Length: 191
Image (cartoon, rainbow, N blue to C red):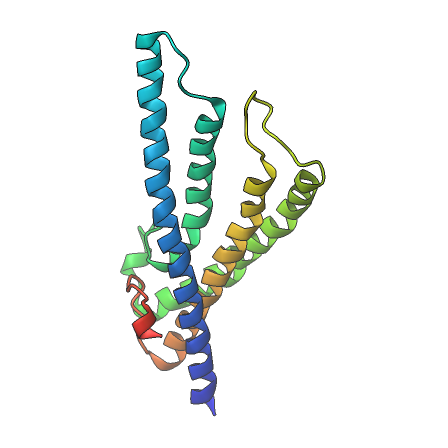
């Protein structure tokens, strides 16, 4: 009976990981697009000075900023999945495997999940208001801000989902000592 419960939890964790991995693959495209736009902005700024023309626009500059924001917002859950986030592990590495697992469970349950929920709840009124007024950039030729603001709560939903997956892996590891390598790439083949 308990094995069936663990299998369902592992299945849920694997599906969350696969979904976050798909977001990460999309994320990689954003990095490429932002790099091209950044290069364009830099080239046109210097070429424009040389030619005495204004070749760039606020829209291109804001597109670069918006893409950077999306990369940051969407990258958190992907970095968490692949254990690429910043850790302060001065003492953590010295603990036994069981103590590390308990710390992971405690930190996820009492810090990551409540913080993610708080950020979702706090950001939604701002997003709703931004959509109501169709918030735009105050700069001439700027872009709409309301679509970008929508990604703030979305990013914390993704982080919360990845936190649930991480909690499941640590819970099952604590109960069964089954290993879930933190930095393993998740592919469709492993689903």
